[in-house]
Length: 423
Ligand code: BJ8
Image (tube, rainbow, N blue to C red; front, side):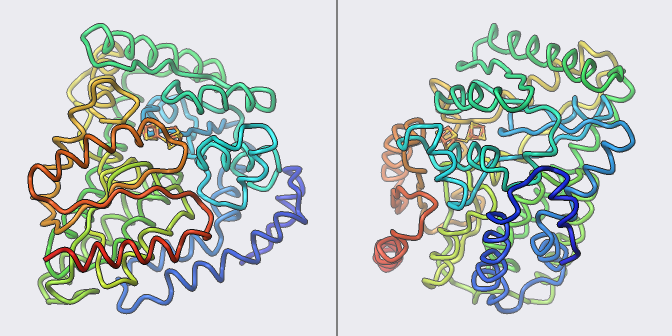
């Protein structure tokens, strides 16, 4: 890895503690990722990004700031990145996916908060993640209670704008989300000093639609049996796309998709035909949370889809590109983002419909419904999800876990038994 110490020092990071993270990540990545056989060549880009995870993209963001640009940190796929980029800003996903940051979060939050929130707060408070230090402003949202309260903690550290997310999908909720997007436009315009024009917004709507189309191409290739890419690799692509430059994310995903389509023609696969095909549904898996995929794929099955924000929810549905006024574009953005079926909505039947549809589309043999411990939303909704799958005769296993490794063996046993049960 190039030497980024000076950059981290200038950001005011705790270098000593950060060194511990830098020491463990390469080994973990090697064990989980580099040990896989016959990976697509297109994964080399993503391997490189991980090898420089706290260096290469942060350096680009700092370059942008040196030119007078602003960086916005986000935590949810409801935040419309198009608006930030249309104002000449850069948005970057900040959700924490490592146990390393959890104890830091527990200093400010109850232990009974989900690991994603604790890790995100810990990464900032412990000063061990450059992305959290670089962002000029965070954009939060009122999705779950834990996040709402976490914004209050983080707002003492960094300027914070919170989008008030509707919790239902009635016509007036769509109108409300339009209003929230308009407020976001004002906030980013003020922060960046740049006007969001219809031309700039139209351009960014296309950029993000292209990114969605590229990610979807990779997922389309996963529908094939035998699969040309592991679930772990597809997950890594999505995790990196959450914070990478959107044009590059599309370019790299398209390159990977080209290769996967060729692999399908040539009969090249990473798992033999007939390997049990698993879909994961539930809470998001922020980088470097690869735990469940790794256990499944080293237990004789393959993950072929994720119905999650680090999966289909991230790229499904495009924004209408035909609008030419800010009002029309905001309406189009609101309509697209409100199609996401997160458990923060009530009711949220659309998610169950999505899951049942994906089971067919991805030729799924069994579904694992995973809940991040202390996430009440997905925990409660999981009961309906599992009942709906059982009703259709689709094998389903409900699991709850966190970012620690202490339950890895127990999970392996349960997943092994589940796989045996699938015909
Ligand atoms: S759209 S899933 S990214 S809110 S796991 S922090 S819900 S207690 S992350 Fe999410 Fe947006 Fe929804 Fe997706 Fe709370 Fe649950 Fe933790 Fe969660």
